[in-house]
Image (cartoon, rainbow, N blue to C red; front, side):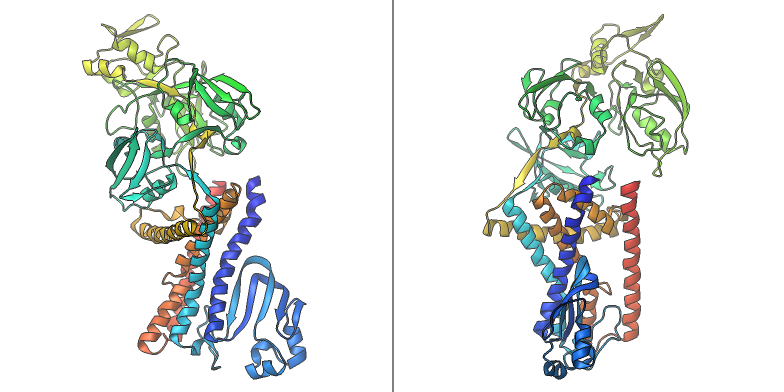
Length: 634
């Protein structure tokens, strides 16, 4: 929040600069075409300072001085009368609000097609070809500005997340295609990718129900597979992969997660910014490498090099790495059995935040004893107020759980390991073992599976009861493939990164031009995907959301802000050139009609078209404003 407040002025000024250069394009083109321009303003609102040839720089507007000298406002004076009094036709002004600017042309007024003039220098009497240049000049200026911003950013160097797989969604499209942590993605549908964002955007912009050819490298070997993106947690099409994490602990951890989670992860003694160097005495170069290493012990130790030059070694927890129970399942386990899940995180502001705690387990939910993760998800989605019995340590607590507006609890679940309890419908149906059975000993699910798979007569004794497991040979063999890994989220670590940089001017110019063309295409693709339905309206950002994202981006450094403003400049150009009334693209359509027929569309048609355009833009503003508030306060 503090970063947002501090960097907000920079983003507002940057956004205002994009609009200013857009209007500057119209102004320069109007001057070239000989159209009379009454005003060119930097900013909006009340006039702070203004300058006019023949008057000079004055506080406020020059209009009062024009009245003193000529007896009429400047826009009522002819060119000859202005020249007689030595006055310039244009008032250049600096205004209070740094939100862009505007240009006023004789015979042209947005939303008012009747504001024409019979003056030979009026906009409406200029040749159609010149008016087309005037209208398109704003868009062209924004595209040129985007190229310049990208060139400067790439000349300095911009750091992005590397296109390296860190983790995969359980049962997601990437995992089904054979991707593994550590794989480096090189191409998507034949197009080379340089950053993880390129991969993400390629998936999000895919045609619905269409597969993309993914190419990646692993240990020097080139692999490929056809992967069909699926809707992910953010509501966008996704490959179900996350970027790899580096060895450096984030230095802004207070901003991304609570100290409670930091301490629960066993890292309270490790200062932010420390670098992971060893796992159980063996050197590692990144968190992703450590997370993907099979562990022999239940309490592995991580060694960190601190920013002060010291070392810290801490024990951390583990989690079982388990296969999907079935091909069409999202549940992880072995032989039809899964560990009882536990709550590992609770979203800020979740209605159940004060009722639930990390480490809680569902002893019962909506009448189902010891439900699995998939059962919890189904039961919650089918009930407006789920009734639950929570196991917290040795205590059982009955609760009615309130849900968020999206019908979810807002919690994260993971397989619990200590004490190990079992769940899954096959416990009852196939093995005739009650759900929630606690496995004796201090082991985790991997120990349990490997222990009973090697026994001639697999069984568990709990109290006076003995429970037997009849396993197939395939299940016995597959138990040896189970492994455990670190129970740490990669969110604690900086992502693995790649710096895109080119020498100025030629290499950076080529990169900047390519980036501009790419984002022009992606902006049009976004509109297409909105129509097709693979991108939802709720994904769009309005002014509030843009400022929020921009402020967070600016907090990462100057090059990030320049790159972000480059993206905004491209978006501003594309959206301004859509064939909608009241924006430049709509004016171009009207001019095209006039060029073909020899006369402009009727004033009545232009009025109704303008009203429709304003209604569409107003509706879009309202929807995106609601989206922004939902993200900020939902």
